[in-house]
Image (cartoon, rainbow, N blue to C red):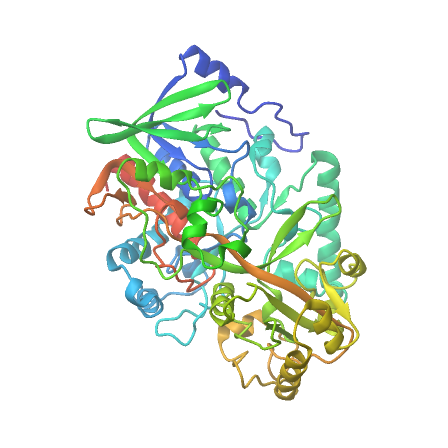
Length: 587
């Protein structure tokens, strides 16, 4: 399905698959292609675009009615060391350095063949998309790796992000693009980490920031009035929008609302799949095979209950449609799920958000934990981790520290100065009103730490002792217990206007606030076992002919660790690129 590019017009697409329905009826519900891609997140779109660029006829099927998967909800950062984007910014490093870093962090889960395949192809992937498609990148020149004390850790340039994108360039096809996650936008407007976010955080303290915010909000309100959605795409939405534009340009056939049900096999190889179309089954034969990129198993409750720690409390940030379809399809023809990773999922602490319409959402605590003047405590009132380290670390440490039988929860604690300067969870900084979030119970407020503890079910004595110890060091800019602010990664998450330590400040200006956080995840790590060419392996470690996996349908090349921001999307794009290229060229 190819849709025209359009500028500055009212964008509607009443039925994006109407013409496809007629086509499948005429073909007796059979379709043919060279490559079938199942799933439309970063991995699926990368595979489809790469294969189509190399001359293959590609069909991309998607379970839901819109495209983009969980990628469209994500922050959009991509870990791709040694890329041409970094080189343009004067950051040139030996490829052995990111390998040395991964070897140190991954430990006994380091798979040399797959890591080397990723590190070799990641810069090629970035260069391919920038040269041949609508996807272009900005550089995270100042973003260090999470564990900067490890050998080979990078101090910047290993991360890239899709450049902001004007969705009007998609024309009517914008109706196919999944909207960003409600909880992580401002009235539906995406805000990108870096200068854009800093402007929103300092709008009341900087005339330049205030002007930037006013311009962004004015344009966004105009887009809402005219198009019914934000059109200034950033983060994962910009990544998907640009990949969608590339897929349309390359004549990829897009089948939203067509979940895959079964794989087809011919002469010992995977040769297509049966899809569930709106008018009945659609049999798709694929001469070069099938790429599984259906989003992993974050909402496969049975598999999650079996593999996740404390699954009863878990709240996933992934798309609800991601229910393990790709893994089941791969297993049906002999594929095996990885079971030796350090973690089965990409953890993130989350809070549950009550909305005015009675629904609830999930908010990821990525930014607030690193700011000075906040701690995380368990029900006994004690801290358990360095709050400024990675989100994956926070959840892992929380689960490890919980007493047997205790609720899987912790509380982020701050004072009034903090919440008005930085916000807390979904609560935005001043001048956005705070009261509604207190009244609906999202945050708890009290005049004293003891009263706050009692209102949250935290031990009052434990919390007051913890705050006394923390404040004693924080007044000197120190965190003797956990070392906040002692690495480049932590300092980047802090506030450069706070000295001597941008990550530490006392919590002592009442009233005091708390938000309850529980284990969550961006998605899953424990996908199908694959080789460096993204081919799914059987029980003997032999590639299954015609079957590829990428994204969270393949076992994470990071071994269940989280060494840097962007280690989900970086491998997803890279192994999608590898799969599409291998299907087209055999290498």
